[in-house]
Amino acid sequence: MTDTQKSASGTTTKNKASVGFTDDERAAMKEHAKELKTAARRGSRASKADGESDVLAKIAEMPEADRTMAERLHAIIKASAPSLAPKLWYGMPAYAKDGKVLCFFQSSEKFKSRYATLGFNDIANLDDGTVWPTAFALTKLTAADEAMISELVRKAASSD
Image: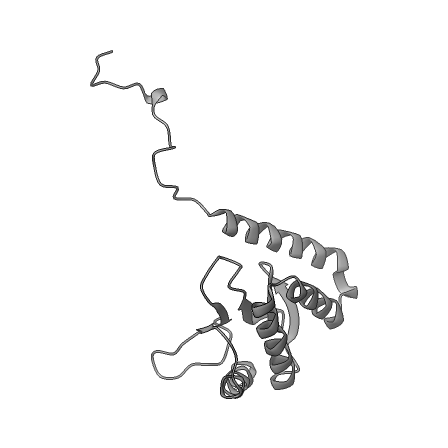
């Protein structure tokens, strides 16, 4: 073989950028698989209290700044839309309507972001024209923020 020719077995992927999932993304998928197994084990005996205890335990593991926001959001969401069922979703506190995740809180630590996120999935009733936000960056919660979030959650969970 000449210097300009290289064998296929001599090439490695170490020099190439990874196009797969990050370690954080793989960890989130593993958490989701674990959540599905737990839900299957609980079966029909699962209750809203089981989901809430799982969510509260996950919130308790968060760093203080995210934990404080997550605790406030949990209270706001429960008060604004008591019909939503707390549950874990990819290792994040989430709130489901008819078994489907409507909204979720993503800690800034989850994917090493500079802010936490409150997100809404497509079942959320937030449609407003042809463009509307479905995720919000959070660095802290003011009284005005809490009022806005309460109204968003109420609207998202409505049947209108």
